[in-house]
Amino acid sequence: MNQEDYAPEDAYDAESATGDDAEATRRDAGEAESSRASRGWWDRNADDYQSEHGAFLGDDRFVWGPEGLDEEQAALLGPAASLKDKDVLEIGAGAAQCSRWLAARGARPVALDLSHRQLQHALRIGGEVPLVEADAGRLPFRDGSFDLACSAYGAVPFVADPVNVMREVHRVLRPGGRWVFSVTHPLRWAFPDEPGPEGLSVAASYFDRTPYVEQDEQGRAVYVEHHRTLGDRVRDVVAGGFRLLDLVEPEWPAWNTQEWGGWSPLRGNLIPGTAIFVCERD
Ligand SMILES: C[S@@+](CC[C@H](N)C(=O)[O-])C[C@H]1O[C@@H](n2cnc3c(N)ncnc32)[C@H](O)[C@@H]1O
Image (cartoon, rainbow, N blue to C red; front, side, top):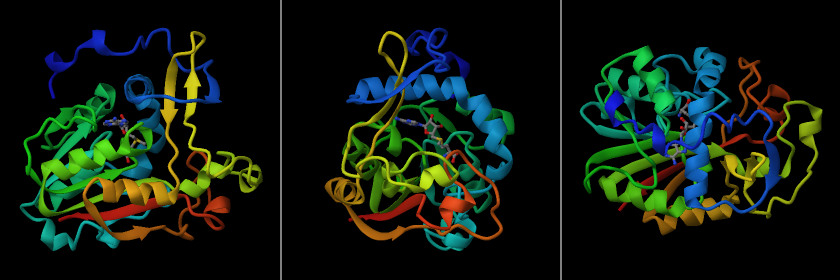
């Protein structure tokens, strides 16, 4: 990534769409609208995200989600010793914390993100990880470029066509390559996104796939999240050409006393907050 590659005219009108007075609703949002909203939202909110969560994420830690499950203990990409000399694609990398952890284990990570501002935070933190500004739905790599791919809450929850992302990841992986990604646990969609007791009562249908959209006064989406049921996610993985090896639902550990948005010790002790899909390409 370098400054010249950034085309500000492509970015969604970030000046007017601050998201501050956005209206929250549930409505359809296609691929282009979702991508544009994500790029604008993460560009505008990257600074807040990194200052709020940067200490928890660590500069070179690989955390799968707000529960704090570390790749160091979970080894979902394989034993740490097996990562040496592996080409790894991190999708929705944010400030590339996970990629830095991979690089420290001798892997060759590439950190990809849609948001220029998130990648600027990767530059601020530093390290030797190559950064690529691109959409997960159109990966700018040749077929069979990577041994492994991973994503901690990056891209997958925000795209309208997750099967397309699965197919793209399948294309750029070598045979036998592992693809591990985490998303909000689908069960959470039935509950209000609140960390306290109000987040413990079912308020919506788990089966309603209508996306969550925040929109500006002109009705343009400024933030989009797409809901898939657990079964949908499994079918997406299979439709993308992968075998599902494991589905990890991290439990809330006693040491973690922090809240992260709607994730909290209270809710984490009762219902799952994160789903991690461990997949393998044929
Ligand atoms: C919740 S953050 C996670 C970032 C990082 N993995 C972490 O754990 O801090 C989601 C990231 O996904 C990126 N993202 C969203 N949609 C994307 C897309 N379609 N393609 C690539 N990245 C995307 C955002 O820009 C953001 O950096």
